[in-house]
Length: 205
Image (cartoon, rainbow, N blue to C red; front, side):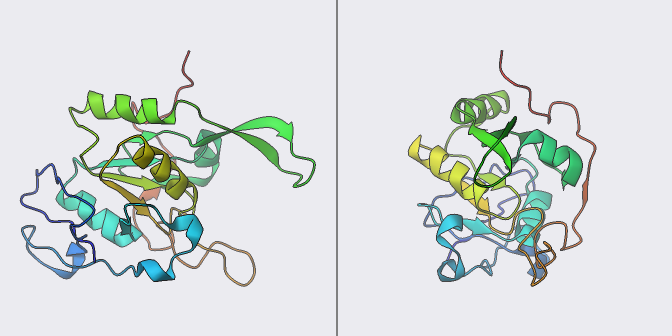
């Protein structure tokens, strides 16, 4: 089991894959930690990462309240975020893929192209905050698949402390195809549409 410890409210939270994630909503003290509710065996292959570090939205929200210096990054396309909203407290939008104006013939959906600069953009964010690839980062998307993909890319690049928010912002679909099952927004956690200064993604160059 994975645990995130909170030595103090201003802690940098250095932890490794063998440490355990806290769900401190269950505890009163910021100095303690509990175990995550996530059983990795219940996750789909699309949500898993090599480090095996996962959070639910409530666990992520509580961790960020106890240690707001943890990096929190949304890897969805910026236009998607503009229309759907985003979790409160996101440090940066760094898209895994960027939607184009071209249509995929098979799916009938707008084509998405990979962001080739994603690792460099994460590196730049860390540098701007005085952090390294060993520091904790929580990555989110719509439902935990794109954030897992982004996490794998970061891990391959040498990141040691990447946590996948497995339910994402919108969560999973119900029997009617509506994303109402879980996720940050469905948990009633703070969210909105307004982006604070410096959070929005800007295309390089």
